[in-house]
Image 1 (spheres, rainbow, N blue to C red):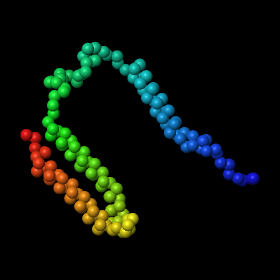
Image 2 (image 1 turned 45 degrees about the horizontal axis):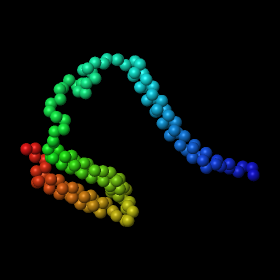
Image 3 (image 1 turned 180 degrees about the vertical axis):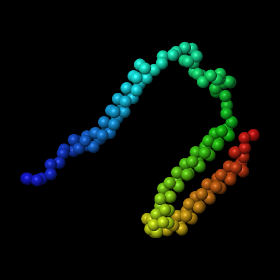
Image 4 (image 1 turned 180 degrees about the horizontal axis):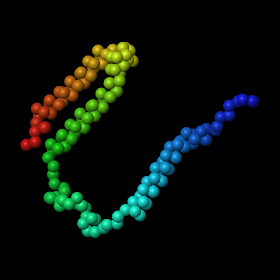
Length: 143
């Protein structure tokens, strides 16, 4: 048949689809190898007990590394992660609200900009209640 499209076998097409990724991985591995070899050959070779010690910043370690920390450090860290992760939910909301507010187009389900704004206000209100609760409990006081 003249002019018929010749399709490649399935495995060959799959390999060709991933060929750029393989080339990138090989290029990165080659670059890393070259940089490590050059750093070893060209770099200064200063060694000694001070340079090879664990604390080469010039400060002597004070106290035991296994001392206990206040629980408050961990609570603040968990609160930071909680509020930081909650902010991630603003990212998908923002383009939807922009499309509904500026473009005037309703999103899936027929919701308009007023619903989206009220929805985010409720979400931020819940976050504010959690923040006020943590504040009242004294989590942010460092006594």
